[in-house]
Length: 160
Ligand code: IDP
Ligand code: MG
Image 1 (cartoon, helix red, strand yellow):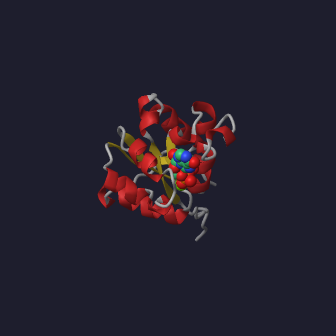
Image 2: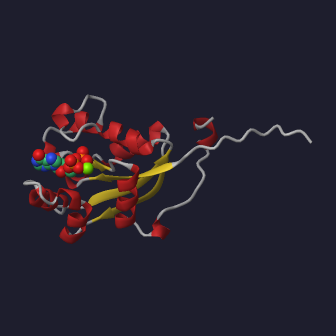
Image 3: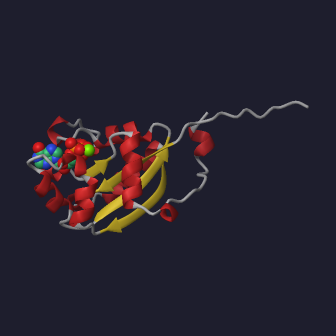
């Protein structure tokens, strides 16, 4: 028997990405999705949500001692957000690179925050900062059955 199939195992990650209320209002949902899609990441969940204050306080609980915490929660509840889960190898760290720095003024052109916003308190997108926080945030925003398992026809052209 000759085996001529070569299997490579790619460690997949998932990250939680959200277009914040200012990003939604400013028409940046498509642009955000486009950048993750064109990179090659796979969309496995997406929904528009009007988040409650309690939900946002839980989402940002690590920041509750910060002076901007209450303004942050008010901002995030000021309109709908588009919540997404993206999957791919290294998607957590690369997702942060696609977003740019927390402060738009430290963000390079070519990043979402570098290209489309000015103020740290209106920085248009959220992305998980680690694999651990991605797991926590995905579980907070999505039910298990909302995460879709599917094979993209591009998979074998993106991964060796
Ligand atoms: P991140 O979104 O880049 O992970 P974090 O430090 O986790 O940044 O802060 C969460 C969010 O809180 C930021 O995206 C931004 O909207 C807001 N934020 C952070 N620092 C400030 C600040 O100094 N003033 C107002 N809002 C801030
Ligand atoms: Mg953060």
